[in-house]
Length: 310
Image (cartoon, one colour):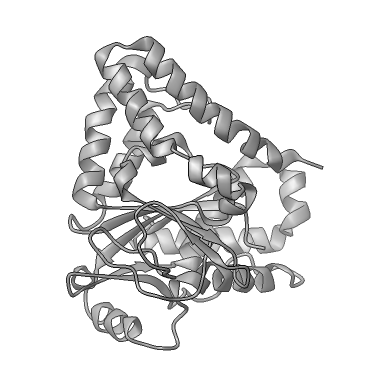
């Protein structure tokens, strides 16, 4: 079972990477041995589980991952590196900051924690990038993640391996690697996936358009995780600005699809509801905005509450 997490990914054109990374990623994209999109989350999860069941646990891998998610569009290769080591460091830093010292020590022994902190500080001093290509959210999708997309960019696949497959939305064939904008799906094994994909230009424009509207109506606060705020939206915009302007942006419901049945997934219109809510704010239509917000909260609060289920 995959972890109950969603992912926001940026795929940069392979030409955006400096050498020798550009050549390495080009060769990697054509390799038959790389994990395919349909299996990649499982491969990541198994590798992480093996690291964590050790004693002491290997919280951060010794070397950076050489794997990536790959897309092709208009004869261009787009790459989203896993960056497992960097993401593990960032996740450990958040975990340590959010937990009491005694709780953190129960999961990661103090000597291991001190070594990880020292290694990460050394990484930071080296000037290497701290902006991962992948953001992760457990047990829910932050409302600001819906802003960069539109309903037309939605790709829903229903079914599980060995139980058949049911198409939905605009998908005309079965496909294991959800298509990029304008890309035709290719026949492959069944999958259960809900994703949105858009261009970096559209993602930045939508976030930039929404930011003043949200700031005027909801303010800059970031206190309530369930609420959209200008602070969170601004952070998202700055993250997107750090990548190539011709990159692709993908919202993947990841393991959260296993918390929703087929009907709930088919009826999930979170991106469209967010767009209507923003339009209502801009026009001063309070009732419309509140109605869309209530729909979003009614869908995601119960899912987030499952984190504490016995």
